Length: 505
Image 1 (tube, rainbow, N blue to C red):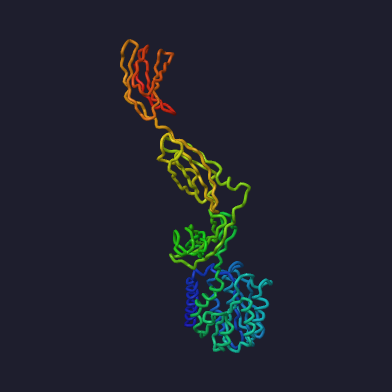
Image 2 (cartoon, rainbow, N blue to C red):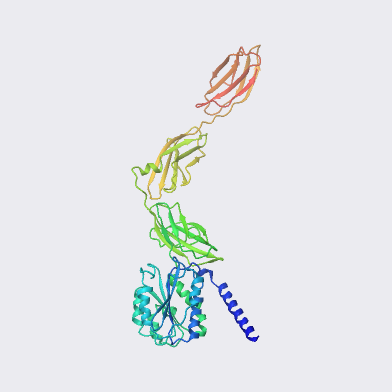
């Protein structure tokens, strides 16, 4: 009965600890990295069984948070004995469940500590790039050597070759081996890649060693693809596991600038013009940048943000394609300018076509002819019209629209625009009967520009009579005006008639 209680307690502790380990997996490690990591595990007879299984458990905990796959992290295990034994290669497992089960199944080889042959096998087969079952080209390679430090053999020369070929070497020693030998074989800096620890305390270096591996294989490549004259596609390795968001800032680099910066607007000393900002959700791995300038160098910064914290930013620079030469590039940028909606003090000026990806801004200059003062209006590249106001009535203006290209070129077109004449209405028309069919008309009208008056009345039901009077006359008498005839007087100006007044006789 007591034995069963002890066994139950042990099982409970095992499951409790396993559950706690799962809950403590740092999310920031998920999808963080890409590279091939080979563990070189001392499985010889100099390693006690207890020590061997402690190393296996340590390796299991160390690898648990990583995302595995052909485009992420791959793991291999090579055991050291009399003859090296490849427990499993890089292509064996693409899930943590399969990897963890394979690590737990590992059995100790015992025999001699033939580390040199194991390193030769690692270099010529497992870590060799471009061969079947070997490492992937153009990705980081890491060798993690777990040893008790007892008589490792002549490892200096094979380790040197691995490092010369670009393999990062890290060592964990649980014994009292030759410190100088181990220091010489690890990749610099030694203080970050060499660990001496008692086997019972090996778990205290788990996070530190994991971070050292991450620093080597972290996917910090922000790729810029499909660059055109006005757009570019960003690709990155997702590091947020679907949570948080990505903050993206990009802008052109000034001549002589160094790039960089953050926030909004322009940061002093960064060499950036005012930049644009956009965000993408935590599960995104790409973004399309649009409305870029042709033939311009840009700097883009991607900052992952989770739980109100910013992770390491990624940056890249790229240059957009130049404008494609055409037989008449200037005509394409500005081909029409028109005037409409003219009033006595305003006109609407329109132009086209609207090509915001080529044009930085539009400038409209206008002045009254022949010698009026020049006035200027600047319009953004997303608008193809403006209304000129506070103009003089009945005046002709010269209007010039200039399209300013991002490339520095300009295209200008001019038109003439005329404002309408002011046409004041007539006021105070009085009609007085002076006979059976005669009426006298009086009115007021002394506006500037007045050319005369137009009088109309009905002589009978089928005829309408008209009379034009000079501007100095403010009255007249009409004869033969039938009863109930409608009499109207309108002011006449240079360009049109103004609003008149009508009365019934």
